[in-house]
Length: 469
Image (tube, rainbow, N blue to C red):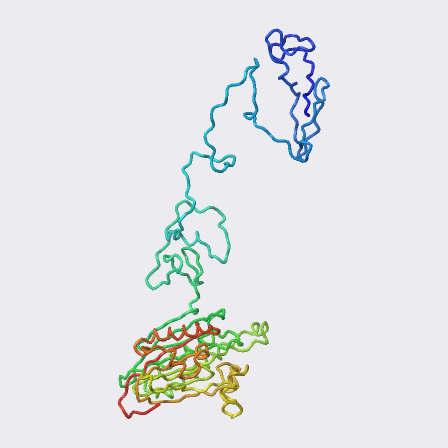
């Protein structure tokens, strides 16, 4: 049980200074309750710099007050009571009046220092698009992770609106995308341009996609239309596939497709025969890829075991009644007639290990392409190519159809001509861009293990008896 502390002897009344007798519980002069007044300490404890509190000084008049208990004797902390929770009396011994009723407590105990005179805030805040008026300095690039040295000025100068032809941010739809691929308004990184590309040029259309497994798109294409000296239209499609084991395969495919496409669109209007123009275009593409290998000596020292940039190339030229194809590597051209009752055909032969095995009679096609060495190419564009042998061929189809120019990222999922025809929409000749999108989707649905690029070139109807494919 608890014990009351012994009362110290008081020489004078703390209220009126009247002398007291030992054992008095009330002042005889003013009636002050002497039992309710503990002796006043001489000083307050001082906390040292290190945070320790010095030992308490002995109580005045030699009284040894008991120390406060840390527990109730059973390992539980002593309950702490607020003053309002304990009954009390006034100086005359009468009960104190009850405290005024407290307002209803909130659902959760408020933290100290929280104000309740502010309006209640919503539990959720709607997301808002970035203010297009903010400057680029107020939105640093995401990958830099830098913080401004000082708070932004209260009124920022408005950012310039994107000019006509500028690329607009895919995130905020308001800011202009700068040269390094970030929005000048919100700082959002933009998708890389080559991750997915689409282009239409007259009746020709092409689509290229990074696929589902590669970290970048190493394919490239070039499409265009021109006119022959007699005014007849001519359509051109070039598709290149970077060799992943080489250095900078994406640069190689881009350089080759541009060089070949530009030469064809320049040579055909001058009267160069389409097949000769295709041969020259492959040579121009080879020179463009070879030029990429001309690196400084320091670059070669840093990567002496790297292969030179390399890629494959396949292309098609469609004129009135004539179809010319050219290739180096394992990208392909397919012919799909508009009348699906007529059989389709593959118009190119791969420069690959599997094709060599089949041509030598050592394996049938199924066995060769099931081998893990099947896709090892034996011909490519690049400074380390054994010997450049451009392949060209010309055909004179006797009916309308569609020419499919593609990389192995597509034909891996539609290898035979029949499978390619089945995957292509029936209206591909009238809607080539839609047809190219469908074929790319077919490859992605199949797994998308490689970059996928396809160009569709409609072949118009020709007079009967002009030739056959």
